[in-house]
Amino acid sequence: MTADPYQASAGAGDPGSWNRYSYVQGDPVNNVDPSGLITCPAEYGFATCVANGYLGQPGIGTDPVDWCFDIANRFGNDAFGFLQTSSCGGWMTPGSPLMMAALMNPPPAAPPPDPQQTRAKWQRIYDDCLKSQMTNIDALKKDHDDKVALSIWTAAAGGIQTGASRTPGGVLERVAGAMVIASVYMAGASIAAAIENKRYENDEYRPAIRRAEVDCSRIADASVKP
Image 1 (cartoon, helix red, strand yellow):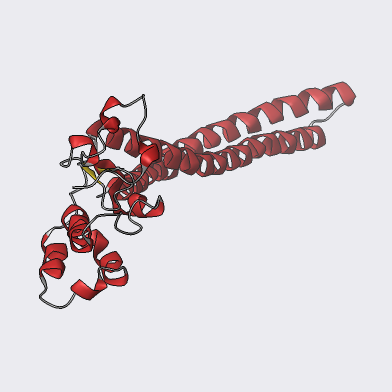
Image 2: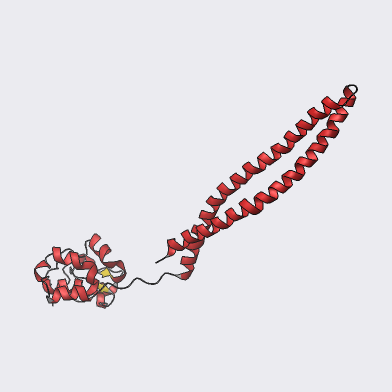
């Protein structure tokens, strides 16, 4: 047994670190220290441990084979490529105990997603999608409504022209006649516009919203699908 070669790993903030002969501060179930230099918390995972240099080479006084087995037993398949290309490669022959350890010890399964977080993510994606879809749907409806409103004013203008040209008498009589005919034309155009607006809402606007809701629901489902 040898002391931890990394002298700076001890500190007053963690009294257990002053024991120079303890392995991963007495918690080998949750931590791994194959380099003999620094503890790699279990929740870090293989990629983070490698990225932070925790798995560089065996520490002073560490058996290289034990170091390789530590990695294989802790990280399993995740460390397979690392083991083959590191100093462990010589022991990674087909059927060797080290290779079998790496193959037989899969990495810990990821924890199941939190239902509340999953639902919140689904709702956020659905809402953003539907908001975008409704922007387009409402723009089309506004364009339709503007055209219908224009048809009413066009009818009114036609009524004024017809009334002014067909009403006998002076200016006042023609103006009065134009207003009467214009009001009749506008009334008819308004009824036609109301019918058209109802048709558009039932046949185009509401179905478009329902299609958007279905499409956005599918998109949200796909985004949270494991």
